[in-house]
Length: 259
Image 1: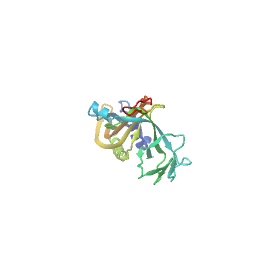
Image 2: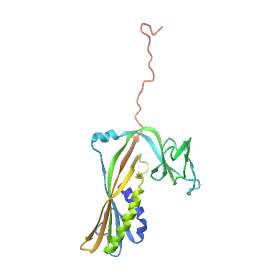
Image 3: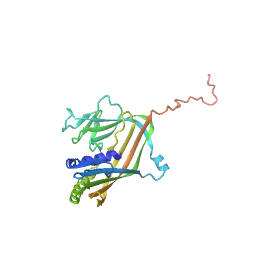
């Protein structure tokens, strides 16, 4: 999840890559040539705000097999298409729909379902993401509040350059933070695991400048805190069959069951 957040912030800063070096992770002592400014985005820590072990166990719910897929407009290009058909090879019950990557669509407000067709009231931003749920499974799904610390460090040879980059970085990432949507970690192929950051809210918490002797470089740092819910889905396999009583036959009192 930390790398996913770094990638989101770096994508927002992409325009600065032509005039400075963009890095993911902490800013090391040797990063950045004297004539080149350096910007490093580091999501250092994710903290789960779980008060106790009982609260963790209580937050876990039963799980079903799931599969994620994307529906593209006809022709594969952006369009005003409103209807998206779920292919027959995708089995299961439709559980979630995204009208753009990471943005949940609300049933009845954003779309309605007609058999295997999703009808949007306004054109979505393709691709449309869907989650289909299948049989009950062993495992769990839980949702717990969390907090993530993100810092953006700047290094430049001139104080004026560091200050100009700081202004650009803060203004750019304030917009990106306001548009932050659900984020999902890409799981390894074949892994029945899903990790998502839901309903994230980001706020700028610290801005500071500093000098870095003896290299005579100038630095600046802007820090954000992100709050949200971390959803964990773990599917271990189909549940062990449980024997159930199909029927009970009994005889009236005083009667011989052989007669």
